[in-house]
Amino acid sequence: MRVVFVHGACVRDGSWWWHRTAELLRQRGVPSAAPALPSCGETGLPAGAGGPGLAEDVAAVRQSLLDSDEPTVVVAHSYGGIVTAEAAAGIGSVRHLVLVSSYLPEVGQSLSDFGDGGPATFLDVDPDAGTFGVRPEQLVDTFLQDCDPEVQEQAADHLARQSLRVTGQPVGEAAWQQVPSTYLVCTRDRGTPPRLQREFARRAGAVVELDAGHHPFLSRPAAVRDLLLSL
Image (cartoon, rainbow, N blue to C red; front, side, top):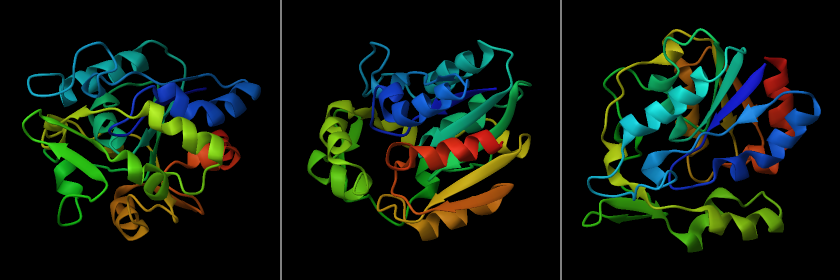
């Protein structure tokens, strides 16, 4: 078994966001990977108008999944669920999808279809540049309030401006319709309210709730490890 982690919006260095859980998995002999998302500027191409969008993110994750025939669990966090819906479709080695505060879009749906009635106050949107990002001053209180100070201090260095195009680009596949799925509801999440997560989770095959904020793989890594090992 191996795990592929698909990170959320407006961050870079997926392996950093994942590192606490990845190390616990490594100790149990389970390797993991965290592919870079081009729309977050992780592959050298600048994010923004005319830059990489959802299609490039899908291609990057799909290539990571195709790099090995080993049975794979894909962990999609937040926006990562949009990418994974298309990227994981039709790949035989993908045995399970785990959606963390995330989305299970139908074919034709986009990230913007999962909003809560208006732009989130913690996002800074720049239509002229064609990018959006998390407001640094709201990062900890919204997304990392249950993490230790070391993580909170380091996280700001792993934020990114992302191409605004990804919010409206629809997916062409819905892998969760083909592959067993588990939704991890984070009950202390201030970014994606638990009531919305539970609504999204209705499409998943199983639902697990965890007393954690938006990034449980940083704040509750042992619990996330145990969930993944149980699959």
